[in-house]
Length: 182
Image (cartoon, rainbow, N blue to C red; front, side, top):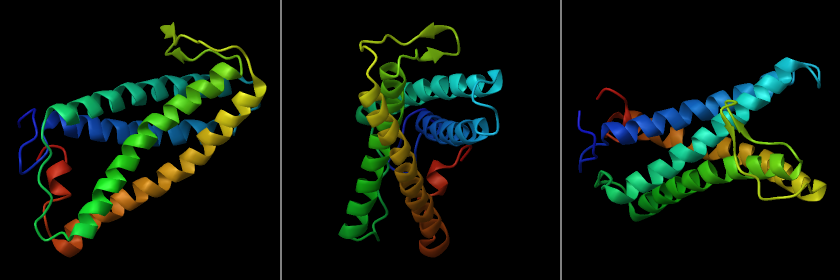
């Protein structure tokens, strides 16, 4: 399996980045919703939030890597039977996916920092903070972060639906060229 993309399929690095980011997003949702089962000041709740922040920094780093890797290499061609509108929709959804891969972790980090909390990465180091505590900005970024989480679910849902549509209705290789080990 080639590291680089080809005109027919995605390379192993693109697939690794794609599926790792997807898995981390799923873990993020689990961590946020699972923490609600613990009392506000419990060590378990704090641990879930520390992991959530750490994985958020990982998503940001992987998204940046994916963006750079995507600019260095080429993307496989879209199926020839796609209309101009479908190609536009596919490019728009991919653009929105990149936007949310950056918006979510950045707004989460800003929310924490403006609330006066560090963003620790697995306890190894803290992300630098360039801001003073500001409750109104912390609230703004909290709201933005939460609203973005619902937007991401919608965008990912459309992305998954389109992949299944291509696989089961169009019967082209759009889904299979991104599957691991193919």
